[in-house]
Image (cartoon, rainbow, N blue to C red; front, side, top):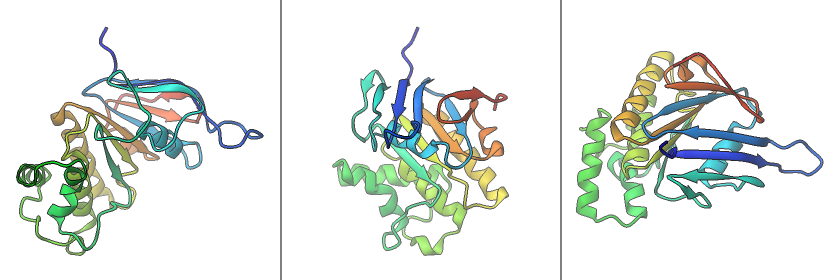
Length: 218
């Protein structure tokens, strides 16, 4: 049996000894090429789960492995899409998308080609020299998706990526996100409170901090 792309084994995270853990004994696996949604109400630990998977926080117990490697720090194997976009307002679209490549030291000429190709894939081929203030919310989220995928991460993490979008634009962004995960051959994990968003995934789970309950197939 092939080893999963992402594997959590009995992960526990507590912040105060006198309080129950935020995550407790959580196990979960994601295969390469799979796009999975985890949904839950505010305060159940979705952000904590995302942070420990990303290496931004460490579990108190258990292990997290990506491609069979222990995850102890954030690296270029992951890409992120956030609800608030997090684009830099004073940089052009192309320079925003190219930031991950600059941070990992890619050759500028190679990076420029990859940025142009990525912008074309998300439908923003002519937007490279525009500033974020010139774009709509849906276009900004496309920039965020392009930036997350430009360095070809093995795992894409999307944290409430449509929370600030109208339903029509949200549907377009979710379709793009799923399509990009599939075409790039890695895995995708969507964190959301929306059943409509979760329904776009291959599998969807309800999360309560201690376990995952499967929902209907996406």
